[in-house]
Image: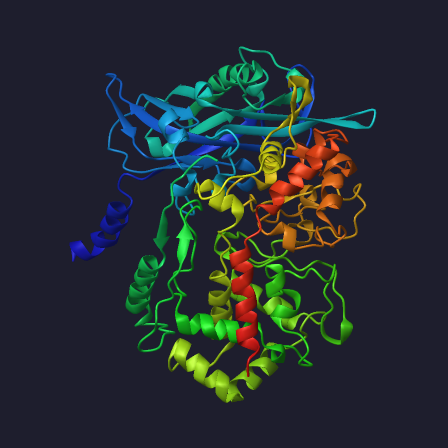
Length: 236
Length: 367
């Protein structure tokens, strides 16, 4: 009899063992990120975002003693406009975790693999993520597009296509104490793209970067992105 | 070009898996297969990402043959004058180069240009506004549209069910299951899924089997290069929307045809999202030479007109794609560069595909 009572619980938990959905909340200052609406930077500048898409890979969970587990071959395409805002982690061992480390982008090796190898719904399938750069090989690690609201009737756009191997952004966030990973959320402070260690205006560098050799804007954006993530206990 | 690798794989293996799956799952609920189906075999270029074939509709010779019979049958329309192939002509890579908007029954005219039909296994939404995502559902839109084939489904199925030729073809494709609109949709889906265009000069060049002329090379360079004059880069920026092997991102964009006053609101009519007003499906540029007129309303007759539009005709509006808005009105390509771009676009023509499409058309028209 006890088995019949426990069986559904056991089955549910066995099925989901090692799977953790880690939501990524996109904020802008004290607000939730909104697309196609004016957002105010701390400098007073206004921006309207039309696109924010990025790739996350090489997720590593670190224990307090410094030992860690890397979640190999797990790639994530995030697109908050289309509500793709979760890292659905697999094969996560039981444990208490101290830090979460990940890359925005993909490793040099993965970056130059044939993109035709990835199945239809894989994060790195070019049709799935729309972040593959066929003209110079490799992926756009993060695409940020939008505009500055019209001044005297002229709309000025910005497009930051951050990629190439040297612009891989390694992120390390401390995890909240006494909080299971399943009750944790990641927060991406999108406003810090402009307001981080590098102070950037939306139209910096003509509002364009394609991360070509010699480009200085993309590395500055990467430095800011590295300081844009944090982890918190999820609100109940 | 980049790679000499030639590696094709047989879809049959996956089809076998699909059949095995159908055998297990379908045995209980929905077999939809005859006793001895013939697997449909085809090769898919390794240059393409893996396709997404529906697992519940395994491709068989019999299913594809039935789909072909239906596709070319004018009897699917209310007055017997319009088939799917009326708007999707084999000669035009299954588009219609004769009309901006193809007339339907009794000369009725809709409002959008017929899109070419190939590589649909990679397609993520159908029609210019992406209002359906499943082919078996998509096919009933033109059949029932009063301005296209104007055929109520019930009337169509009554006619098909009484036709001895169709009875035989449905039995061959789907066994003893009754003839229904569901199996009709599956048959058309199978026929459409096997229309794959993957052997253009571009593909052969990537496989190292041919080389581009100097002009085509220049066109390719322009196509895949940014327009960023501030950094001395003056490409044509085409790749943002048409950049992968399929020459479409499968997304929706406002490409500046109108200054925020177009009557056709495009994707907005499906989603209701303000930012998708005047956005339309980004079409594949494969076979673009064969598929005039261009744009959702067929307003441009020639590739030259299309290039002129992107060169200096893009109109600003609040939903204009940022990749075009950054051009601020013009990219001012030289006449030589415009011709080079067109030369490159013509390397995307797949003569073998069109030959096959025409053969299918003539086979289907035989009594």
